[in-house]
Image (tube, rainbow, N blue to C red; front, side, top):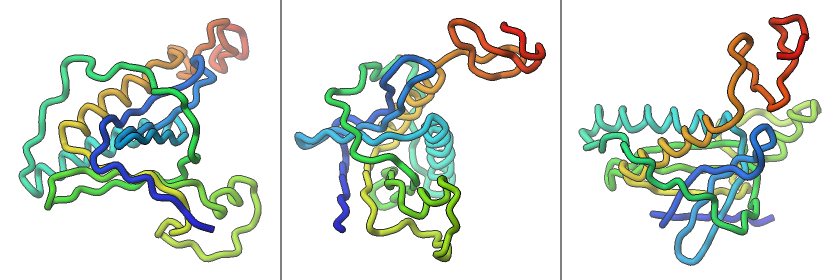
Length: 190
């Protein structure tokens, strides 16, 4: 089976976004460039961790390679919705990050969920030894960003993650518009 590598080096636009109402949102990474539009689905926690780890990567690149980092954007920047149609190419299983010191760019690679990951989710035994390298037969989205574009992506990703349902002040679980059964109130509605 052949795999596809959707490479955008650099993209015209690369953003994290959602489709759906809070509590029912599906998160996407979307890249556009060269007349192509690629959207890949992932989990909210993956978007949050991606933003956090990109921030750490930029800090480390500045420390090790003396890369000039732009300040975090003070304006909202790209706040437009995802471009349509939002057709999911694949669901992300693994995210990889790297800093290319030669070009002073950040490389983000989103790799599709593999069969081994699906088996683990279904509770089936894992017959194959674990590899640290993702399967080469899997589809992937590869994006190369400047430090400024990376900062803009981080800020938007954080806004998207925080735009969901507010947390309950007692238990931290998301509040639905109709309230929720708070474990701190022994199951009474809040």
